[in-house]
Length: 581
Image 1 (cartoon, rainbow, N blue to C red):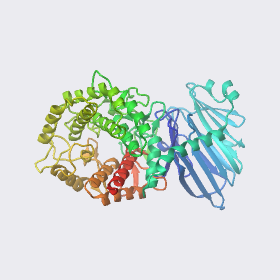
Image 2: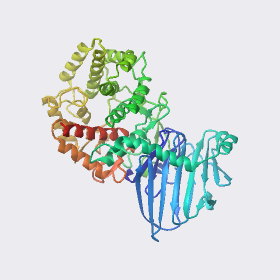
Image 3: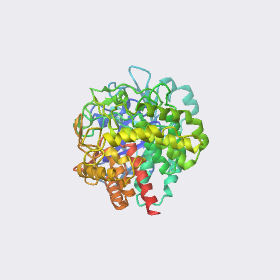
Image 4: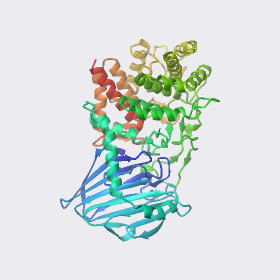
């Protein structure tokens, strides 16, 4: 599916671009806004921006010369070429493209508002087009160099080097044609050069890492940075919505929010990449969400400015990716109880402390750490929807219970580090005993939930987070059961089925957890095979989705998926640490 798309970001919003140079997804002004281009969700009405050479294209190749700056090279029938470099300038809700062409090109922009519901009013200016939302003050301006207006609101540019610059404003009075903008002058060339330099500097962090998987490492680090919303440091789980898990199916979800679980995994991935600063920024964002009157993280997900998540709704007028309906905005998981998320957060906080030994920071946030552990100790008997966000059913999920144990364990560890007493040992012992009494099958493996005989691949994370030793007989039996029932090629499915039926394709997060388990078992060769396969199927750009269709060799689900890229970094780190022993 989405293997043929590239992704760019400026830590405000992000765009998906096809191998033919079409901008098929771009929300404005931020990740969770309505897209001005959404052709990926509706070929006819979604809206797009495309650059068409005045010659037949025989081949298109995309590459990252630097992270979050995408270069498209088009080979033409005549033997001539067009090179387009796309980026989103730092600090702006805008799109900027540098066009270096041997031939005349035509730029066609067809933006929409409110998920394709409204077409803009177009106003013509010298070297610019202005697009006004007919129902409010939203506006876009498309500025171009050395071109002229053609048919159908297109822009015709002669051979040579040119720029196009599309910028969004919430109110046209603050737009490019305001007094302030005209006085300050626009310099798109400088914005382009400074943004490239910005990402080059960021990329230096992973340039020095010695690994055979450098492409995957660079792309993964770029994706993690490219899903962070810089004003708050909240990471979106994925920058897109409603790319289907199964083509033509209904498993189409909006992931453009800050999940506690995903954000914690991303923070750990950044730490494994050596980027403690951005990891701490994410941890600070998450700490700011903790409340003292209810469950510490009341919601499993939040908006990227830390607000309550919006209700889920269907955008009925969009046809969906290859007819995969419905297109959804918002996520009903916000209504669920998910008990594992505090464990993921506390694990990331503990990892931060292990790296930095920053006792002052831990002392500062200790009231929130204590509240989390106390709440876990008092409420571990609750049922929940689990990491898999089962709709309409609550159970005693093994993984959720274990992550609650981990939340208390890491709180206790941090208490001892600052010279205080671990007061949750008895609660942890009681919970652990309950898990091994209720969530282990007659054959001796951990089950998906209490009373079940099923397994799920979330159980692979338990030795990674310290709940059980990787060589414990119960875990080894669990691993064998997962490999026997859920493995498909080198990857594993989440589970066999859920409330919506069969889980058809392997899930890449848990497949990477499997690789990390293999490293700890001394089976690093098998972990390396997983990375080799991901390296192969990720193509030239090294981007990975949520699921992988083994039969058709394509990603499904939202794309790119941040926690998958985070675990790529963690697995590379594990292999490196193992080889140096």
